[in-house]
Every structure is written in structure tokens, then in C-alpha cells.
Length: 325
Picture 1 (tube, helix red, strand yellow):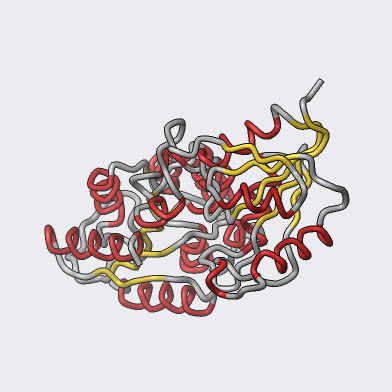
Picture 2: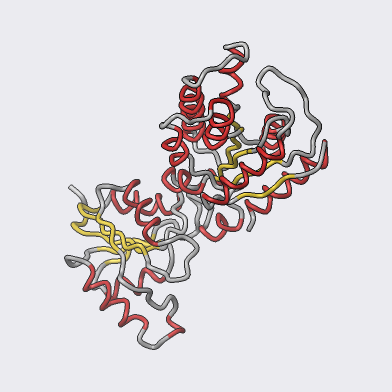
């Protein structure tokens, strides 16, 4: 039998990390019913609905709530600070609370306002030496501390995109090596080589489906950064280029590939022939179509120029800006 009937945890969970989870797990070990209030802050960097989703996904056995509007965050803001919080929480919570769990000293006063006991959890941060502020300052370095639900949403996915013979595959591998991240190869090349370059319209569906499945497998590992060599938009352009039409499933796959950013490679490299390349003379037109597709779909993208090491360094700089806005 649990020690308490009802317990309470308050937090921003911005983002939800293992320190928060240690607090919640401790609370769950002592109460029959745990209420978690996700603080609704107007100017927070992560929307309250997203933070609520993370907590609910990790702790479906709890009741997760939020107040309807932002409240003051420090007693120095108003002499009515504790009255505001007490009245808000009493109206929000469906029953009285026996114990308040917190990792900070405010919890003692909050428990008093709710006529509950106070249970301090890991105040010195010895169990999980991290804070949400530290994670936000360098999310990649502190990735291991995030909850899986937060990782799935905060993962940075970067698609290397553009016409053929612009160094997409080379740059994808270079970026993955530099950032120590996984990458997804272009699946079209695998299909084209297996057909000795003689692909049919029916192969376009095989290409987009196989590429999407490989992307999903790579994302399931929850890396902080994932580089992807081309996407379904490329397949759409090529399908129209080679066959004058597109498979009806391509748009479905495009909708499901919601990447963080695209690196659109310029056609400022010399053409190099290969079995999976078809159009040496109209790469500029193809580049324009790629750009039009990204613009029309509202995709976030940057154009990468330069040759050799310059191209690589330009791309690295763009990714660093993306990771540290």
C-alpha cells in the first residue's frame, strides 16, 4: 500500500528530462494518484501543449493538467504571488493533495499553501546532475538526459537535397562524420544499380517507400542529429522528368517526411557521369525546380555553394547555425 493517497508535482518540463523523471518516479512510488501540473508560460521556448504531450506519453498513469493562463513566476513580481497560485491550483485540482514533491525549496511553501506535506527530492542534483537550462544551452551535448518523448520531437533532421552530381552523397557522409551522427543513404541509387540503370515508372514507388522506411529506422534510434541523402520531393521531380508523371503515393511520403531543414546544393560542381545519373545538361533547371518545391511547401532551407573543402565547410557552418540559433 502506498504511503499517500494523492500527490502533486509542478514543473515547466522545458524540456522533459531525466531529472524531472526521477522526481516523478519518486512521487509515483509513494502515492496512489499523482497529479502533474505543467506550468503554462506564455513566452516559453517550447509550447505548453507539446510539454504536456511528453509528460502524458511517459506517464500515462498520472493526471496531467495545466492552468488556463500564465501565472507570475517569482514572489518578487507581486505580493499576491502565493494567493494566486493557491487559488489557481485549488480550482484546477479535482481533490485535495496529501503531499507535494519538488526538487527546489519553493515546494515547501507550495505544500503549506495546499495544506499538504512536503517531500524534497534530490535537491543537490546528485541523482541526475542536469537542469533544463543546461540542456537548452547545448541540447546535443546533453542529449542523453532527455526523455525519449522529447528526443523524438527535438531531433534535428537535415536533408541533403538538389540536382544530380552536386555532391549530395559525399556531403552527407562528410557531415555525419564531422558531427558524429548517423545518416541515411539515397535509396534510389540502390534500386537503379540493381536495375543496371534501366528503371521503370513502377520503380518510383519502390524508391520512395524504401527510402522512407530507412529514414524511419534511423529516426527510431532517436539520435540528436540525422542527415538524409535526398527525399521524396526529389523522387517527385525525377518521376516527372523521366516519365512525365508521378506515382500517386509520392505526395503521401512527402507529407510524412517533415525534416527540420534542407541543404540545397548548387550546381557549381562539374558533371561526373555515373549509372544513376541521367541529365547532364539541365542541372540548373532541375535546381530551380528543387527550389520552387521547397518554397511552395514552406520548407526551411539553405543553399550550399563552393567546391571541395569550401563546400564542406560552408555546409558545416550552416548546420552549426541551425543547432545553435
